[in-house]
Image 1 (cartoon, protein in one colour):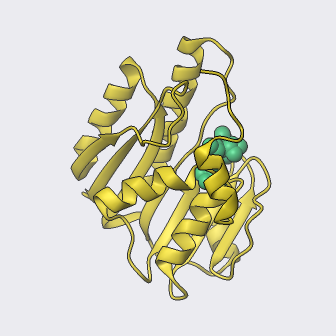
Image 2: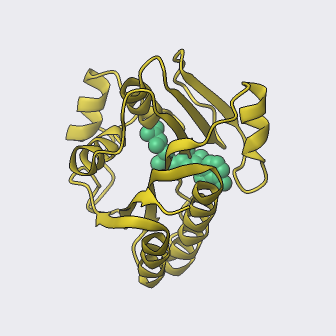
Length: 197
Ligand SMILES: C[S@@+](CC[C@H](N)C(=O)[O-])C[C@H]1O[C@@H](n2cnc3c(N)ncnc32)[C@H](O)[C@@H]1O
């Protein structure tokens, strides 16, 4: 299927003032697995342009905080959202938290990170696997016991190894391919609930 920038979910996101159509993937996962509560602290890896930040900000409410990082600038500006433009592979997130005097653990860590695709399925999957493992390491460092994790990965042999890693660290583990995922995309989302610290 060819890329359709103006498909149903892209139009819906525009009408509802979301920064990206990706919002509907997180919404579907959340409706199914109940990830967020008011007052939550949320960490968003690969946050630009910002639709997951918008969703998490509303779910967390004014008592919650949402932190995000991305290589690209984040468009969304909200009172409980704090972002940095940097590379998760080299940036120490603790610097961001220190900047805002935040020294809690997170209730939810989520990653929608995706590599720039090269057209080589093997290379793209391997790169997506590396980013997902980095997201999981970040979750292990910053999640509170009992917290939740959701992470995009390109499907392939490695994806099941990643799912098994998540399974071993969380009480429950689910894999979902959201309805709004484009037919041409290889992405799936692995959710871990109830982090075993
Ligand atoms: C699909 S987009 C995220 C969309 C976002 N969830 C939203 O709702 O607006 C994937 C993002 O991952 C980011 N990304 C990829 N590698 C990264 C890295 N090493 N460090 C930080 N961000 C990265 C990209 O810059 C890109 O903006």
